[in-house]
Amino acid sequence: MDIKVFLRYKNLFVSLVIVIIAAVLAQVLFSYYSLQEDNIDAKLQELVVGEQTIARWQELKLENEEVKSLFFAKDTLFFKKFVEEKANSLGIRITFLNTSDIEKDLYWEVTMQLGMACVYKDFISFIRDIEQKSITVEDIKIVYNAESGSEKINLNLKGFIIK
Image (cartoon, rainbow, N blue to C red; front, side):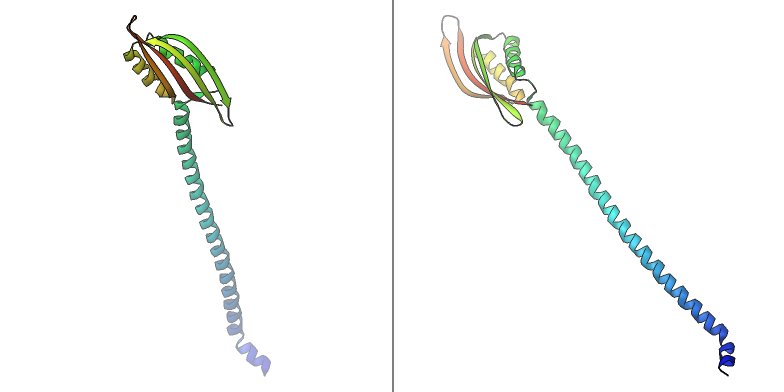
């Protein structure tokens, strides 16, 4: 009789086993795809962070180029040439020029003792022009020369050259 009962409910048992197997498979697939979704979310978050990092690097590159444009690059002679060219373009006569530099980790600090003879108006233009490259004037001595109608000016300048 046990076999007759089994045969009688055979379709029900087979259907129940199929439903259980389908439920287990559905649970496994759901777990797998939930894990995949979490992985995709993590990868998307990494992508967002990467895009933000790239954007920040681009901003820093632009800032770096802007800062580099304010300073001289690579050679300490550029500082001397720049000052001489600005003085010559304004008709300023340089009476003496001495430079010295101190090497730092990322830059050279160049100091210049500069003597010049010119009218005050040209001197002011000269100072404005050299400030383009972040040259600072540390000391100024101006003596008026009544004979020539011009000033004798002694300056100590400081500039920075990026390596």
